[in-house]
Length: 272
Image 1 (spheres, helix red, strand yellow):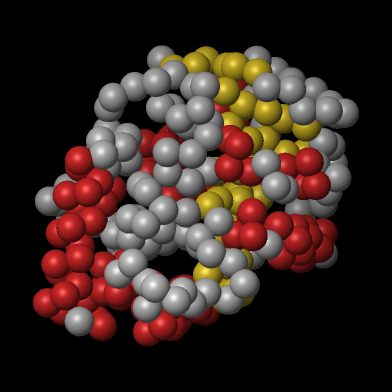
Image 2 (image 1 turned 90 degrees about the vertical axis):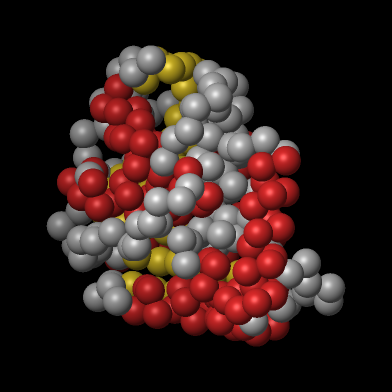
């Protein structure tokens, strides 16, 4: 999903430096890096059509706090290139298999950006024993279209149709079905009680490309994620007006601070 698309082998965990490697997961070869050490393991899930370089601004710093893994999903980066549709649940299944191949036995802290947020939600719902905390950066939402329609139903529907045509013209990405299929989109899956933090961008723009980026659109987007996080006993929403969609590039220190907050909370619980 483009940024503007709304309706958007066993290893030692004591490596001192990251090194790009490849591993077979089911029928595909995935590019990945692992580095750092510590009692917590962080798995990074990139945005749509993005490689593991999506995490360049914070990868080495996270390694100072924990063991950290980043990878390129099927069809992205240097992983196997395919022309096949995947859903967020498909990708969640592959992420689970990747952790098994890497012999990650303990639950991870899952940090996800954009479309990776959809994968993270499916992962947390399908594999509750493999995740102990979520940190999502301006995650995608199947309710993005609701923001446009709430502002102006007629104009919103026109913009949604135009975005869809533009996406098709530029080539359908592997996650196409999650956004443009005619089947009903899934609502938020049930996720267990655990620390959950969402950083959402509410940054205003001078010349918004569509209703989603108008001042009212930014306000509704922030409210949406604030309300979602509030449903979790340990939920936290951070609304930032200093970052655009790529929070990890615009405010890497904010990402690192919120991750450290989660780690500190986990250190006070049974996950030691």
